Length: 448
Image: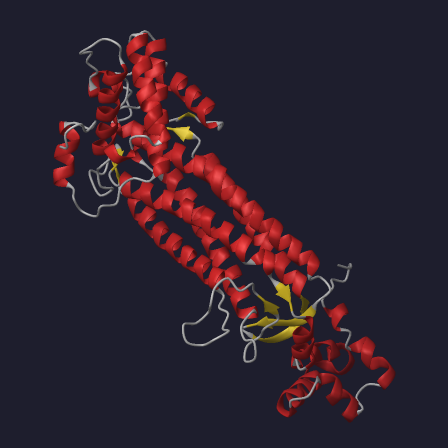
């Protein structure tokens, strides 16, 4: 190991065995790991299991880990032992050596296992850290980003409420809608996604801490978990609690899979929203072009003036990655063999990546795309006038078959439904405007 490194021999041996990807645990995981170790040290002092001077030095060292001061000392690959023991030991060694530096007495010894890991096991620490890290990121980063996106979409829904346009089903012309109704539908998708993410966060409130090796709580004080979790709550501002059943908490990762399921559903919603916006902005001459997106960069290296839906496509790729991560998390969660899940590191990395990607992707999409969208009312009107599905409003007057003939003739001749009705004398001229009131077609019977 490098001279002056804080990690020790156990980490070095793991480093030599797992040089697989170079992918290390993300910052939120290391922050949560430091917080858990800090809380554990202070609890063990409170319980009289460690001297206060020793515990304070360990807690200070763990706080530095949480702050990111020693991220360079966490050298191990995500692809390691399935319990995450290697990274737990990495933390124990870093905290022990740093605590020795902080202690006033020359030559003071801090043991990674006997002191830093006191009352703990990798088998309960790592699942605890996963829940603390993921839940904190969801509450502090993802949910606020989604709230901003929902608000932006709702604002556009109000702004565009008077713009009547063609609806589309199967990508084919359908009866009219208001552009604001489309934006309101997307806002509701985001709102429901927030509720699902919030429910997933709540499910991760149970922590495995206190179960130690197999869930029995061997070698831990009976009050250790409850007191340590109170400290974690104070540090994060969230409400965690000890697991009802430690065998479930350590043998299964169902709560993490459920949270990932909420993220996956959110990704599906965002894929639709971003792709819909991409379709509506297509053109400007040979596409739909009912809306215009802000130009954030040149759209082509060869075609001057081209504007691409950059942020929409970026968000679609985020959604695709999250869907792939959910497949990884699902597989990892299914490997809860007997008393321990054996794929926790990759589950943690995938889950935290999904949360970060969704938060950052939504924020960029909101700020650099949605808030700058402009409606093109004249284009909406032009396409609507040529929409044969407006003939649906004629069903009560001439029946489905008669209205279908009008629609087909309008499409065949490239004229409006109104023109076909007039030239065939199907409805008295004074009744046409009322029969083909496209605004009325977009409103519910009780009024909208």
